[in-house]
Length: 199
Image (tube, rainbow, N blue to C red):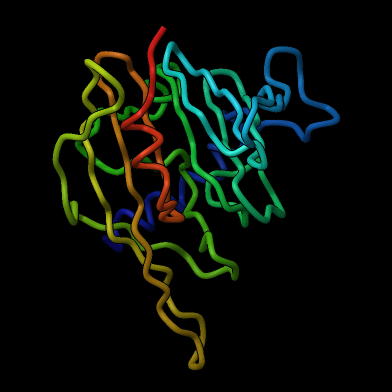
């Protein structure tokens, strides 16, 4: 695990040069600008991603970056980074998955640098070597996702620091080439995915 963390940290400088970072909302390029989900009746909104259609609370915000969508569900200080201080989850398409070499066998980590704790602070994240749980989950009629839960933690910082444990949940649809990643344990997300429709 330590070897992996060191390798990730060593490659971070290269990552900054090689990987484009999404620009803030005001300066986002065409085709990658943040977009709000279309409001619907009864406090919900329609969110479509690669043919998968979800009904999400209208209070949630949707930001699109190429073939990745970040759904912001609560307080958000920095929506640009995967492990930013921002409550939400991600929908990731095949171009981004291919770039990071994601196949569903290992945890999705879209960075070469060591991410800091998603729940505040600058402590590094220690990623699980093995999945905590896995199985198949329905993602709308006729669609099945490979579900995996990864039990990670933030390392304590200093003598007064404490270990913050969290679970990164992933639903991967290999045929549709969609990954849903959630590390905030959204209770309603499983139901939203189960009731997805497809077009």
